[in-house]
Length: 202
Ligand SMILES: CC(C)(COP(=O)(O)OP(=O)(O)OC[C@H]1O[C@@H](n2cnc3c(N)ncnc32)[C@H](O)[C@@H]1OP(=O)(O)O)[C@@H](O)C(=O)NCCC(=O)NCCS
Image (cartoon, rainbow, N blue to C red; front, top):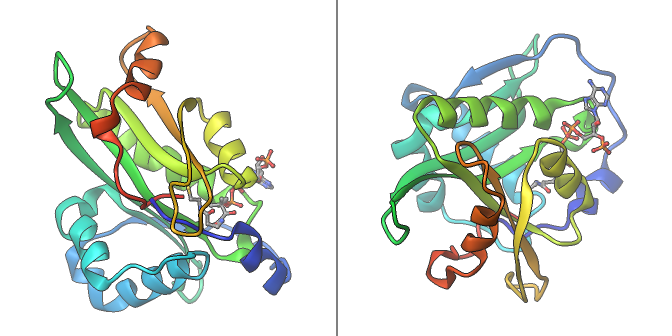
């Protein structure tokens, strides 16, 4: 959903020494005061279009159990976050339970250590455990690190969304099929114009 300039953060920060075992935790409402400002700051850093607090609360209040955070082992500061939702889509026959990765970001100095991979795997597992048929997201076509990450985890390109973001950039819709072995199901999504969400993950 998010439109970002993926290279901006990398240029700003030197790579940090990997701090050892990060803490990976599930978001819960009691953590809002402690972590929502940091989540917003981390996500909006690479966004070309900022989201209001209501966008974050829309996801976190309903699907906090599908949001995971990577925390620094000593000071518990936020290093990475993934935000998702899981909903039934009845426009498909039969209806599909579709997971959606809405936001993903890792603090620039900690990129390239597998933090995003670990977060996305946790989100996939959580959605699969709840019966998701598929997981989708959009990512900016120029966002090579994100494209590589998702394709390494098995996501397929299902549709190109031309000029999807406010900055005029196009996106790919990616899909991970959790139940069907029919790869044509991925391209079926491409035909389903009504299912294209407004920009959230990039
Ligand atoms: C895209 C993004 C989330 C990736 O985060 P990340 O933590 O660097 O991702 P990972 O470390 O899991 O994977 C990146 C690379 O590190 C490598 N890696 C994985 N585990 C590693 C480890 N333990 N040690 C070193 N490198 C590792 C991966 O192989 C991968 O390399 P490759 O894809 O170039 O082959 C991050 O660049 C980011 O926050 N970008 C801005 C926001 C954004 O674009 N979000 C995506 C929206 S869809």
